Length: 476
Image 1 (cartoon, rainbow, N blue to C red):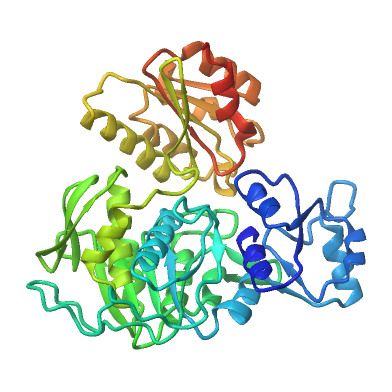
Image 2 (cartoon, rainbow, N blue to C red; image 1 turned 180 degrees about the horizontal axis):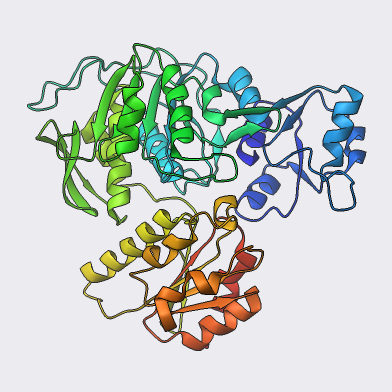
């Protein structure tokens, strides 16, 4: 919603917004754009008399224990008959219509892959618009409108590549201005229970991966697969679906029907594959090397993200060679293995991981990076909070010991959970500790740290600014 507000502001609208507990980097971005942010959802905001209220999916008809509305402003909007719409619907009607939309969907890696793809298209001269659920460091903002017209660039191909092995087809410069969007499967609004991405009508759709998540709105994996198939149904016959060949769930989605060109990546028999370590690998198309990626990122997950972005960019005529060149300059996204500082030999990272698979991928990626740097004895201290709705419900608590297996110590912030974090982490024995508040958590971590440690803080929220407080408290 913050990125959508930025797009509306750039388009010339006067924009205000309300929310509760907004935290950086979005709060900083909104302030820099001159967008007034009102704390809370009071009905007095009706006095602003906007042309339209754009409603995010945090808003509901919920009641507090005393029976009063949790969102009084929404009740006032409904009572008054004021105009309102959802964020995805407003975006579809006012920004995405008439553009070549490249949408990146998946349980994990959406933000990073969307940022990679936007940067590749920028590097190729296409001046893309984009909306990302984070702040790509190459751009410094989470959203922009991009150019108003299709751009032809010397780095965009008119015809399929002629290089041996580069057998891309259906490749041409875009006829419309391009827009890259992070395509979330979460529901749209309390009055529209379809997944957000159904509104986006992509011409290029990336299906990065798919496993069970959002236990608060989906009963099982099959329910999410149906939503992904709804997305595929909106891709035109001249469009492209880029799919992770390693995911059985996505194979099931495609088997429900697909009417567009398909490119796969990741598996040994996929169209796009990688040969080499995640930080330095050859990009292969149908078994032939077409480019090489050498960059600062680590982890197999980022290697797969890169292949997805390269395959999607090819659909609008950007060669793998140009895409790889762009990725060598890619600076990642805020809160994606972001180093917040090093004090007394202790390095503190901030990462958005919150699903068990993402936690394991992040921890494993850091472990592999340390091994490659010849530092196998340096410890990883995983500091995390199960903050997402899925984790708060305890739907995946049994996976936590597996997700933290490659951490030397784990520290869990257990406030607000309806399940016993100590019991869930018991298989880890003395390597796992649980705290009921951030102060207690900081005390535990500070008592355990030693020079050479890597403290990996993982949350999809502000986490009580634990990263900066930890750096400030470490002995100088």
